[in-house]
Structure formats: structure tokens, C-alpha cells
Amino acid sequence: MAEQSNAVARLDRRGDHHQAPPYYLPAADEVALFEQCHHNKLAVMLKGPTGCGKTRFVEHMAWRLRRPLITISCHDDLSASDLIGRFLIRHDGTVWQDGPLTTAVRSGAICYLDEVVEARQDTIVVLHPLTDYRRQLPIDKTGEIIDAAPGFQLVVSYNPGYQRMLKDLKPSTRQRFVALDFDFPPPDREAQIVAQESGVPDTTARALVELAHKLRALRDRGLAEAPSTRLLVATAHLAARGIPVKRACQVALVSPLSDDASLLAAMNDLVELTFP
Image (cartoon, rainbow, N blue to C red; front, side, top):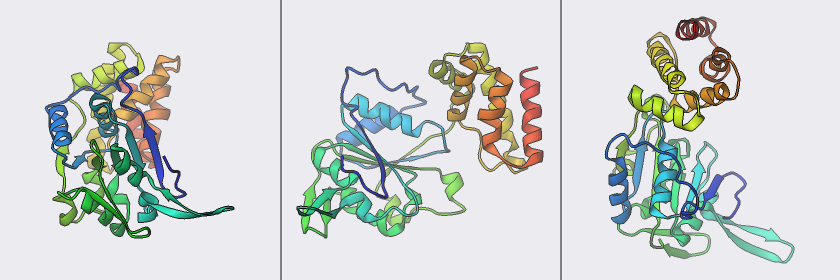
């Protein structure tokens, strides 16, 4: 994969079935829906709160479908050139270097744009020809039009609850995707995920999930982001490796959520109540 100065991209060879599959516990019919979208060459949009499993789901599906996965973390400065590519000046002349999106189109990989609305609108527009019947990527700088290789699929994700107040996708972009809604799992399934991912006992996993549900209720008191399943897993990893569980909750679950003294005090009180 070509490295880009402003694009944060990662290539995973998920098609290698000698590796263990990325752990993912389905919530409904999202696996079957994604498979049908892939077979029918449809772009997919994953909508849900931060840390609820969207990225892990894409990794799991890339493994199931035996496709390489290129992940791009979107941000305000992400340009079309960061995605498509650019000319580089070397000692022996000027050469073209493909960006991560172009690499995915040529190789038939799944291209996953994480938090796509963070990218500029003029950058998002370059995705449009890849999301309809054309499945093409025009490269204006070289005059090339690349037909997407078999297996290529475009997947984007974002957090609609957070983005609604800041940014959103234009309707002309949204209607090019099949949208799959994600949320935090029900308590029993979330506890199963935490235990599986971290190795903590089931009782500890259930207690952490119970705490998370209490903390999520604090959104009515000004908590900007609900504690994610990802934070629970990080907390459980510390607890599984000998850090006292209350201390693990303080540093990995409570402190990352807020700097507000009153909210921190309320959350630490809930930790004390859950783990007396």
C-alpha cells in the first residue's frame, strides 16, 4: 500500500484464513446483509456510537469474505490526493504513487473509511463514482479511469449522535449507501464480548457492563459521550492483568469520558457502588 503524508491508512490481509477470525458477536442480521451487499457490489454505511463494534465488524467481514482490508481514518485535513494519490519527485524523476483508495480499487480490497464525515466535502465527492453502477475511480492528474476490480467494496462509518450537531453527510452522498445501524449490545451479549476479549471472569464482565449502563444514564447530566464497549474491554484488560478493578475503572473507563469535576465525582461514586 502506498504511504500518504496526510492519510492514515492500514492494510490488513484478512483474506488469510490461516489467521484466527477477528472476534465479533452478531447482534441481528448484519452479517447476512453485509454479505449480500458485497455480492451485489453495494456500498455500505455503518451508523452507530463510538466504540460499539463497527470497525471490528468490518474486520470480521473482510475475514469471512477473504478480502484484504484497507482502513482509512478520516480527519479534517484529508484531501482527495491523500485518497487517490499524487506525483512524487525522486532523484530519478517524477513518479505517480497510488493512494489507499486507489490501491483498494485496483486490488479488489474492501476500503473502509472510518468517521467519514470528518473528511472535507470535496474529498467525499470523489467516492461517488465508486458507489453507483459505474464502480470507477477517475484520476484527473493522470487521465486514468480505473474500473474497480472484482471484490472491491466501499464501506464508511460515522457516529450520527455526535455528528448531528457538527457535520453530516449530504443527502446526495447518503443515498448511495446501504445503511446498517449499530448500537451497544444488550447487557448479556456485551458482557460476553468483554469476557471473551479480555479474559476476565464472567462476574467481572457483568459488573463492568452494569457500571457502563449506569454511566450511560449520565448523558442527561451533560456527559458528552457514553462509555463504549471498547472502553469496557480496555478496562477489563487491565483488571485481567492484576490492576485492581476499581483503579482500572478510574483510569480506563471514567477519566477518558470527562474533565468535569462534578461528573467525575458522580462516575467515581458509581464505581464505588458497583465494586464495593
